[in-house]
Image (cartoon, rainbow, N blue to C red; front, side):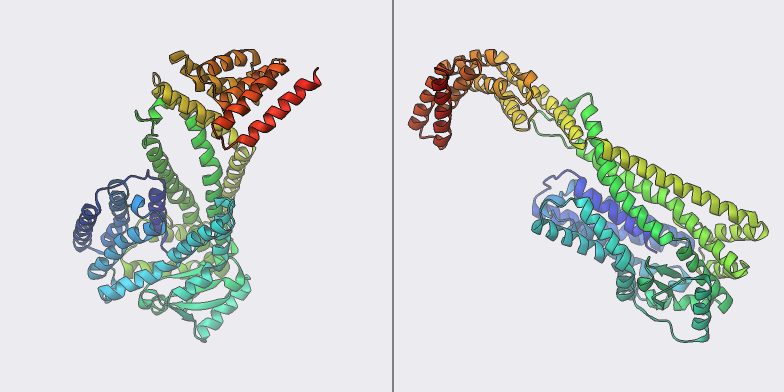
Length: 578
């Protein structure tokens, strides 16, 4: 399949979305560098593929080009700043995809694998595009669809929409794939009758058996797609049919039936859903925890009080590392052992591994890839060796099933524990702690700059961080004790703080008096009226509220109704106390 391409595409999307937005060089310079870079890419691809000595080296080098493509794409993102010019992630697919297109075209010129030779570069490229399109098209459609839904129904969380998208993709992807890939129904024949009889015997239901015509039918492969029987398809390439005899074909079918019987396709869908939830809940919580506990928040902030880009860069690199670890190593372990379990199902259901061993040996001989390493399949040589060992020792089969079942249960336990901890944790508390720590970094940078400190204090107050706001206002007044707005804002906060422990009406009255003496505006007079009221002097509160109303009229305030209501309320309380 195309596991490697999917993972590197995912990494490209993360890089595009998570890397700090940065304006690149002027448009003409950017275009020139981009074209020069593509020329260098073509020369690199040609050198790597043209000098491969055999099919195995060619396959290994072609796979390594995916890493090189990601490096060139990194130049587009980090140096040319293309995400700031083309913000939608669909552009990431096109820009990263153009490296694949160029590499596929060159691969068509220098292909060393015997069963894939004979295709012109153009036909080879078209075959690759059609092979890869079922993975890209749903992603583009889901991205655009989710964006449209969020515009129409704002507030729906991303993880909910992507979960729904993954489930729908898991159900309907096989139908989409057989439409986008060149396939046709397997012709009626004795071989089809024998395959259908075997599938009925082992209890595997399908929507259809189809010929897989990818790469003009030259691939030596078969596969099963679909979690639900109506949308489940068994695909067999004409190249494989021409290479293997009926016994070997039936063994390959038994291998694919093993994937269905052991619910490997369901597990793959669950792995994807688990990653989505871990990414949104656990990783985000862990990142917020890191930011909230980082002991040097000043490093987050530049001298001009903008957030530095390196925390975003670290996050992007962490996300990339998580993707590589989870898919290449974690899911890769299960995929390799699912493949081995499917091989064992052929042995168990047919009573012998002779057919599947012979099929693998023929594929290895023709493709030249017997020793080719694979993170999602064991190499053909390793699979053949294990089947020989399992045929000689039936206990090895049971040991494999038991060990794999145990590891799946461990995986489930770890996922649910992590999600449970994330659900029980106070996400808003972590966000608040992270914000407080970041703002401490801003505060440290703003020392000795009262106007910046006051802006910070105002922001803290707007975010409900009252304790931190009080602390910053105190620092403002330490630097400039005659700042009327700092005096007023601190007084108001000491009067109206949501936490009673932060309130201090007597000190607020002193601050408000001083603020009015320096600047008797309507807003500051209103604060003084509130201070008089909370200190029990209702007459003074009424008189000051009237002054505030009068000042508001002279100032032609847009909030005149507010001052009218305040004056009536304070004076009504003053009259009631007489």
